[in-house]
Length: 260
Image 1: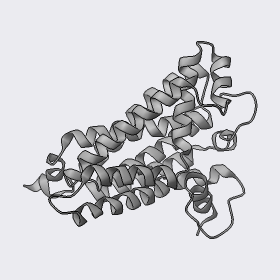
Image 2 (image 1 turned 180 degrees about the vertical axis):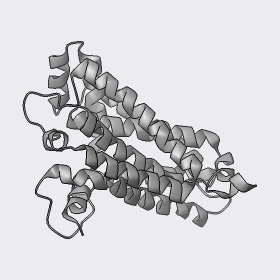
Image 3 (image 1 turned 180 degrees about the horizontal axis):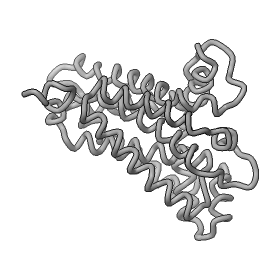
């Protein structure tokens, strides 16, 4: 296993993987979509258990299990970043104060409320995907959301004057990291889902660019917490978008619908 892939798994998940870490943390960035795809595969596998329940299954229960599994497998890393980001936004208008709030390990009221709402919205979206038989799209959503972390790390400067957890990833990020990650995400999108998959990737890019503009204007750049927050934002928006399509999503998955 390439060292960068090993580091990517150890950075983004609790999954045990063999091998030594890469000498530079940023070397893991091109593999972020792969790790996201693997996480999505796990969640999709859990969604298949809906068929084990009688009378049409139990979509809400299965979705809750998917949500718990996703949170545990990632150590809640990105959820923590999202909560810290909301705490910072709600706690002050001053840039330096916001960065200080994000660095604080304590969870504030703004972050706690936002975290509950985020998890609730995810659960609703996943329930809809499971009930409509379209939960396979979770694989692409998680691959895209992790790819967008690479986009932010490459395009934005590190916001803090001092080093933090995200510092080596952001300062070591190179354009070729993003090119490889984007190609991997596009391969998953087109190969597994067809043209609509590429459209989902494009929506993810659009959301990420808007979030990146906000990070640069309000905080001067990106941090590890903001990378996690951006990933959660993209993931949530894409889940809701796809869930809204419901069973109709099946008709536009793959390539067959183009020739029909």
